[in-house]
Image: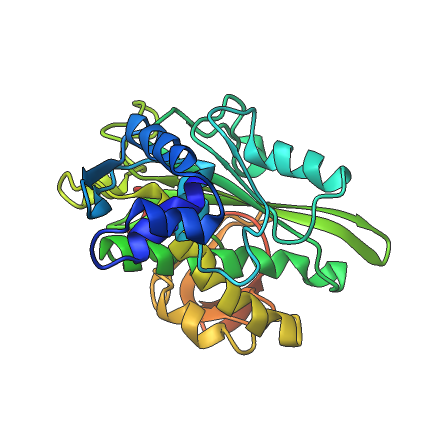
Amino acid sequence: MKAEILTALREAEGYVSGQQLCQRFGVSRTAVWKAINQLKKEGYAIEAVQNRGYRITDTPDILSEDELRSIRRTAWVGEKIYYYEATDSTNIRANRLAEEGAPHGTLVVADAQDAGRGRRGRGWDSSSGTSVYMTLLLKPDIDAANASMLTLVAAMAVAEGIRRVSGLNAQIKWPNDIVINGKKVCGILTEMSAQMDYVNHIVIGIGINVHNESFPEDIARTATSLLMESGGEHFHRAQLIEAVWEAFEGYYERYLATQDLRDLRNAYDAGLVNLGERVRVLDPKEPYEGVAQGITDRGELIVDKDGTRTLVSSGEVSVRGIYGYV
């Protein structure tokens, strides 16, 4: 009931009486009073005035299932939410939930992870109170060969969510790193469980650096956070989560209509930090350099190599000026 009361307080222009809350949720005044006190203990600033009721006056950066539910405006993402103060990895947890029958759109969020990981098994610093760690479970009716493009769809949503909440110019380093001023602020890891011709489920894991004040020496030159890029401003992580998935739903529906990126290419390219820039493609056979010219309908990076059009479908691509490549 706490989430419902939070929603009611946020929707109200002024005070909401205890009687109104009782009638709306079919509970006693004592139950409302207990819920209000629990919310206060969790950090919400709620003013109580006799004969007027309750009014929420401030919401600090609280991350909880109640907070996420109270601000949820998505159509289907997050109908089922699992929140953990700490877990091994939201991707690991989402995969387990999928195997247990969790539905399409299930959202897993954690305040901290002790086994966070990125692409190619790299570790991901996942301390408490600083960042967003979340995974979305999808069970789409799509060809398994088209699933990898969802990573690019997620990148578009994250960049838009960050821009909407922080005002910072978040861009995409192909295929799915989110960068601000040449440094990485978010990583995305997509994993799939599939049979020969059938997708069992897909999980999209997202880690966003929000309130990190510093990073370990080995990544300090390449990593950043919203706090660092905004000059010390703090943000509500729950609002950022909501903004990302609101954007994702729109992009996902457009992707689903064609199972490729033909309707999203222009929007993706508009946020592509690589576009028109000199890039170094670390091809295992023979690395080469060229100029990035956007993506194909299938999400491949188009690179002009001395007048020859080449397509990069996977692997590492370094961008001049990003992560130290000069």
